[in-house]
Image (cartoon, rainbow, N blue to C red; front, side, top):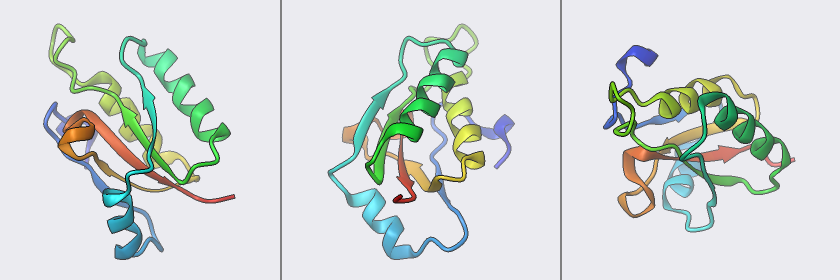
Amino acid sequence: MNVEDISAETRFNVRKSGVTSTQMRHLKQSSHHIELDLHGYTQAEARQRLHQYIEQTHSAYLNIIHGKGYHNPESVPVLKIMVYEYLMNQPKVLAFCSAKSKDGGAGATYVLLKKE
């Protein structure tokens, strides 16, 4: 997926090499996601918080709330795009997908991290 194609309603479903369908199912169905809300942060601040969070957490499952970008004057989902790019390039990230509606839908992303 190209970042130019990411819109407010774009849903993610990314699994890196070696991640099984069972692991993806657990990611999507788990109720034990640790939550990180990035609302209200600049792109640089949100990226720093996301990086620190991933480096410091001991949980395998995260729910990153980034929003859909509707409050941006151009309706560009800046934080959503930043989160996508970061997760794609983070070696600790095994997989990620859009959250269930009750957890934020297309405005949030579930993440599966490598256990250390």
